[in-house]
Image 1: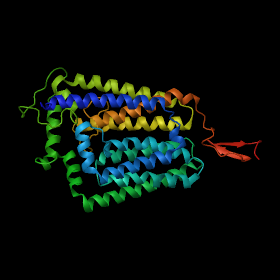
Image 2 (image 1 turned 30 degrees about the horizontal axis):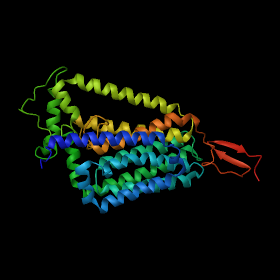
Image 3 (image 1 turned 135 degrees about the horizontal axis):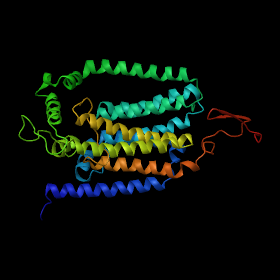
Image 4 (image 1 turned 180 degrees about the vertical axis):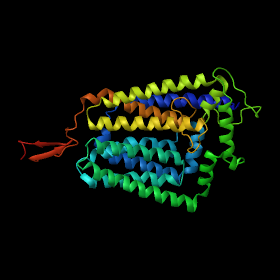
Amino acid sequence: YNAPTPFEFSIFKDFLSIIIGFTCMFIAYFIDFTIIGKYPKKIFFGLSAVLILLIFNKNQAYYASKFLSLSVTSSFMLLLFPTAFAGIIYTMRHKSYLGIIQAGIVFSIPAVICLNVWNVSSVIIYGISCLILLTMSILNGWLNVKKSNALLLVYGAVSFVFIFFIFYIIINKSYVFNRIQSVFNPTTDVHGSGWITIAVRNIISNAKFFGQSDLGEYTTIPLPSIHSDFCLTYLIHKLGWISFIVIMSIIIAFILRLFMLCEKQKSVLAKLVSTSILITFTMQVMVYVAYNLGFQLLSPLTLPFISYGGTSMIINMFLIGILLSVFNLGDLIRDNSAFNMKHNKFFEFADGKIIINLNAR
């Protein structure tokens, strides 16, 4: 028996991840995305249950992910939650301020589950994405509330949570402050987290527009995981800034195109779901680019479809499949469909309009 080499095994995992990713994308594309509006609680709490199972079976999940990258780890699984949360917001449209409070409670469940277990970056991306969705819903009048009061309620709660989080890391997570300090002054922790920042900034500062850069004091590139966490930094070193400009131009054009398509959506559900995926995608890019340019406050998850990672490929392609489903069916969806309105009332309120139902019994 001849065991596969690490390179052969890596190629096998990459190929398998791409196949699974495309399969998930096609499945998501052909499934009616309105199930997110019909069964948002089942979807949201189902995802939360999987997170809990991963916690209690973290060793098994770890070894499974090492073999085939089929285990959906929490860091990447949280990328699915903003889309599920979009469905939660959609069903809360007629519940006024109580709906906002209920949405906040539902939001906190996966955040609390994952905050002390895995990647803080994914929790922050999840939190900011959901906050943007809720803010957008309030400003567009999709919730039956007074905008100023609703924003005060939401951001008052966010401020309280932020202050609590600051006190929490002061008491229990002193290394977080060391990391923050190393971002702005990496020389304070040269032998710790600061050395990566120093190495990245050294590579960036010596990079050329075309061609390979001079590493300065280093004889070889000192960064770990250049195929995943530091893909852009390595390309800038190897090929010059032109590689970064080309890649980012394509990504920005893609994001802008998605934004324009999201803006064209007429139904509230289609706009919420498509925007949730756009925000999730954009924030992954922002965190990754900042990390590769020497601002390493948050650890990167992935540069979607470019950096190495089987699980990230599957999750992001599944989200793209949902997005394509929205763009394909969005014009056919109306918010006064059977699953999101209360019938048999003489007066109904939907999307900021008062509807008189003459057929009410």
